[in-house]
Length: 464
Image 1 (cartoon, helix red, strand yellow):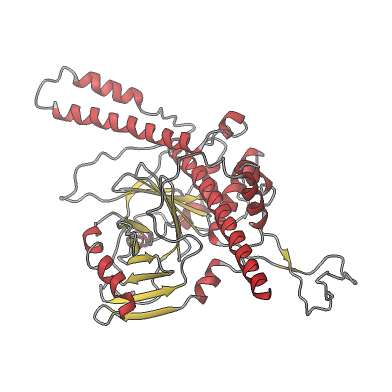
Image 2: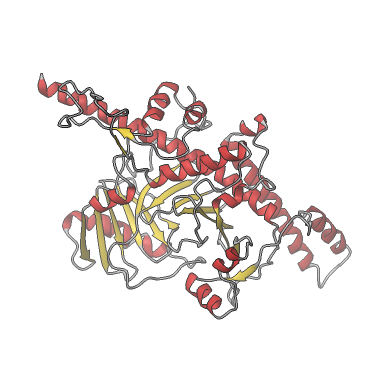
């Protein structure tokens, strides 16, 4: 059974389901562990909690399946305001084969996901450190592994995928947030580092992290943050990074420097494009799956598109955009020189732009929003409309933001994008993200099955 067939086996699951638990001390059970159904028609069930990654993947998969069935409404009916998360990964540090993977968050927190089952994070003040123990799942954070031959995600091993897929609905014993509360934490300062942490802190924080700091858009420094700092709870890499943070944000970084953030368990989507991420879009995830802007998922050929094909399509789109930018730069350089080719250049650029139909397409409202606090302040002063007011008026609350230009910034051209063009880019990445998280869920299920098998074998050896 391929991964595609394994994934379809759970396509009918539209909500978390309970799993039957047999309690040997329960009056409904006998010594053999079989449930005696006395007066109850069904065995007692314990509600199962979904992890953040698992629930986000299930939500995206439900949206796609509903679209295939012609249903476009929000399956959960959540009434949330599309607000972008303030904390995400905005910088990666070289993955050290001995110590771990370093990262920098948008709030100024630096951290290292160590190879020895712990994570060390440093406060933006550069003094306070926090150690979280037991943060590793199954795979170590050592990213210097033997590179495997690239293959489509659909071609997973059939037997293991089949067994792992059956376990997906039962292996999580607690929600991610419940698990984080059980992790042991310790606190110390840079001047008083215990010997067991000295190498991790000294080799990663002092050398790599200061050189990695860069002033991207949407960043800030939370100098008052000293404890309970966010950190990585899971990360994996194919040709891109997929990260889950302790604040519930799932982040996917693509090869073309674009990023999507999924927050509120997948209900809210944030899209940032470009290497410097000057533009950010925030909307409800189900808005991206509207009928007018979505792909023809009823077409079998469209369903058969592999992830690599979609990534190639993204890169091809970026190459075309880069060629257009070069044409614009060429026109600008000819302002003081020969103007014979300028008109032709402008015509070619204009003809390759997406056509705008004022009756069907809606322009996105461009406005500067360097931080959430600034946006709220402007909204309270009546400069910008509140998201709640847009929702109350029945308007689309999707937002596109431009980092305000300063004298030190290079000149950029603000291009108007239609909803159609934007949603095509977003949906393309959402489909990739859903498949990646599905692959990760099956991988973790395989790891758990392997671990349980080893534990059972160990117990049998002890009994013998």
